Image (tube, rainbow, N blue to C red; front, side):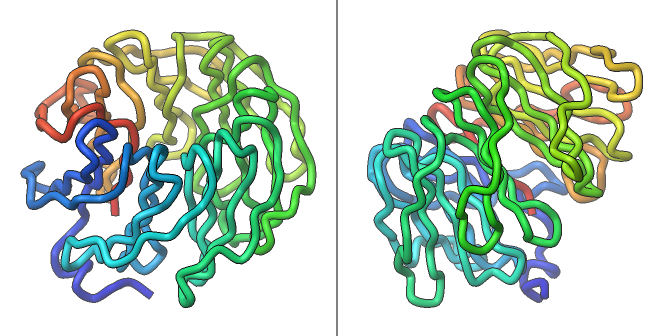
Length: 301
């Protein structure tokens, strides 16, 4: 169930500034900044609860996550996890949260009602980003150091299977239908396209470099991947299995997300302390929004 206040105010982009220990809040319709929230030490990647009422922000150096009231724009709790807090996700019913701990090589399972960790589950080495599959049966995690994708139970986070990848899997996106997962590798520059029914790799290609973030574009047949050591993002056509466009942004693009109206993509630029707003029709930047220092992760909702 959506938060009624969230429905009235419209969608927002939440951008974690790792160098400023804050989250910048942007109106995703007007592209104007509407606020900022102080969080923990070196915030990395945010996730929004299914009802839009809570924002969870991993704090890499703080060994914790900040729980933010999305209506009041204030941090209401801090929950200790383990070393290297990175990707995070919610269960579909919003009762649980999951945090990948990159240096501890674990995933923490958080009971949100009690605001406490109920278990730490060992996974592959260097778990970074994660996505909850539609329906909540499975959670997928990129493990950068052990070069694999971990598939976990969507309630307990217990490992179910691993899928070997080239070096440094980091960026991850799941199609709207949940039938495909796309994984971009930060080190090898490979991109894997995976069938989530069988968990078989359908095909792979190489494009761009240093893939930090990925998101599916409207229609579900193309994926935008950021190139962390360049100043452009790539669009990969899944039918043609080829890069079909490069869009200039600014320095060191990291994560990206599509607005709910499917008109724009927001791209966080870690090397320029800003967000590029990309028009999906013209495939050009129409707005540049200054945010906190070293923005890495963002989410829209």
